Length: 134
Image (cartoon, rainbow, N blue to C red; front, side):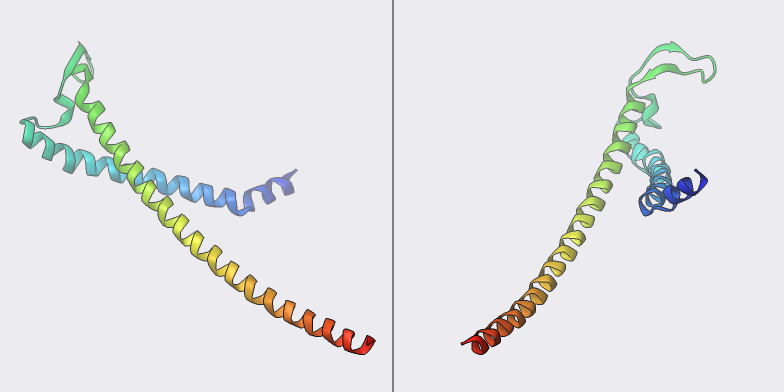
């Protein structure tokens, strides 16, 4: 059972998935800082608020933070985060598909060339057999 588990962990897909998860978590924290420290203050300058969390407050006051529990601005900030992450993932997948298509095209070209050499050789053998049998 330990050997099976080791083989499962050592398969490429599991390791790649783990690396992708760690990179995704790191990227999310980077996008969070980008949104909170750059995008939200710029939007705040336009609408005269220090940050988006103060936009559209509603609900009861939370005793731990002293702010109202609901905020449309916080939701808007998360939408901005999601949009940035989704766009970057779109670009990554688009680039991956482009490179994969390039590799597939190269493999198809090499297969066609190797098949044509084999076909030529087989035709020469067939023609040689036909000459001998006549």
